[in-house]
Length: 314
Image 1: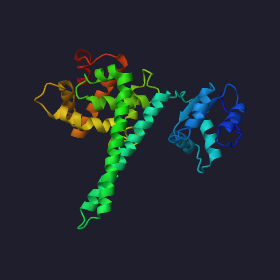
Image 2 (image 1 turned 90 degrees about the horizontal axis):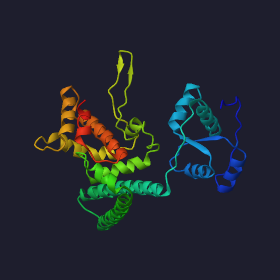
Image 3 (image 1 turned 90 degrees about the vertical axis):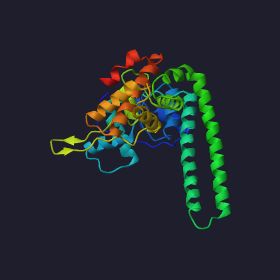
Image 4 (image 1 turned 30 degrees about the horizontal axis):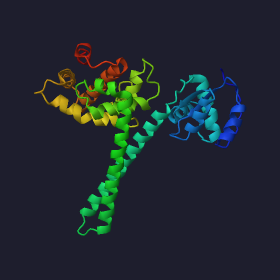
């Protein structure tokens, strides 16, 4: 519906009682639109969806650039709320589908696992720095080693829990994905984790959106004939799958004495022959393999070279 010229603003405490009051004051057939805030919007999102409300979630970047088009220079909570409302009334954002409870738990495990990996690297760097000095404090070295061992143990337990979940729920998908050249167990696991964290995967037309979500869709900046910047891959994306695939696909494309991966190796070498750098060709090959993984995952069938073998060479 078209938004009225004037919008009313009201502040509520962020608790269950006030969310009930907020909902009672809203139209019955209202479309609720909120900004993505990491985890802080999830309580309200879950509350509204349990009440049967229609809810959409937009990114702060979308709303911010929309506001710049209207020369909005200042920023307050009230202005942000009005701006989100104006954005939604024009662009009609898609409905948000909340993940299931076990999928939310899986996402939390994955996020915590990444945090543990970063913490482990921190202590390893600190330990390397200490070992590079002429003298080392024994207590510092001991504590750092103990922390690293504890983190490794926690990571191992989390990885086992994730593997059990994937085996119970996606055992056939894991096997099918590993029939693709260059895709091993860890890559298949990371792919499924990425799928479960991506909203709207059920839509058959969103393959491009999923590739963009993984950071495999290059950005193009061109204006006229004088401004033509080099295409780059976005860093603000879910890049874990892309990073895990880089070395295996590099080995697949470099080793010419193996039959495995011949169709993707030809595709990669063809791009290099047409002037692409090795890194650009590898990223394009990863992009292609991810699209094949999508097809295999959605079809529920193993990789068939007769079906997919010709497509990467086109």
